[in-house]
Image (cartoon, rainbow, N blue to C red; front, top):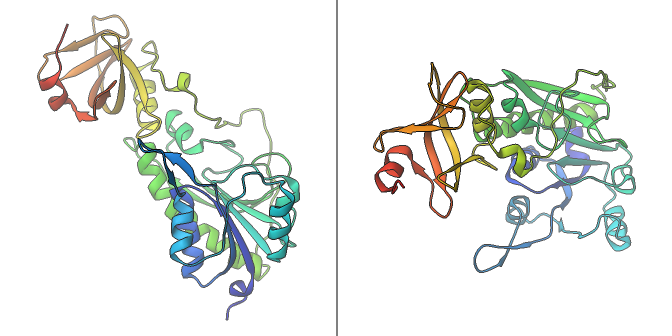
Length: 309
């Protein structure tokens, strides 16, 4: 048995992004003694209980799953302590109290979706694209008091294509991140990693939580800025505008740099093949969209069925 396989590991995560990392650890033979994930939540029309993506995977591998409502609950803390973990790993989970992250002797490692110290915060994938970055990455680091500020262990760079959406980058990033996390666990097990403190400067970019107002398109921005917003919020939570008084989500678009002759936010259409919204320096050509109360459609299908006022 390799040294990293003898470590007792508790894994914490909830969404699909975290599953790739947990799967990589399991398939490498790591000793996962516990998986902490969000409680089941009611969802859908029938309000049936839905399990997190991490729980579904953990259950399929017969792993020990814990779903605490509160991380400071004494019973949960006692159960967590009884697992005698050497190391805890966090991927896309909630903030941990010090009672939790400081529990194992080797500490708690977090996988973050950016090249720290850039893009600390809740939505690094989205903001990297919204800001027009051509490169991002993943970083493993040790948790400490302030969010996303712990000492860096390893990082890996990931290019961002000119047309990449947040969804496409997410899917690449989760695989690169899973591999980096496994390298990190191996390095910690054989003491081959030297952690490095993060540097702090005034020009660092941040990745705060995305709110509804972030998603509303400001047509006074340039074509490039609106295009980056659309792809940075696609497929979720999705950039939106209004069309004849109804909310219109835009999932895919193209840039047209030209003289418009229209005021920013106005649209032009032949009602058959194209719908263009004007910016000061050109148009955003909508390619995939969803009108309030309707399903997501390609532009041609949408225009065939839309009744213009």
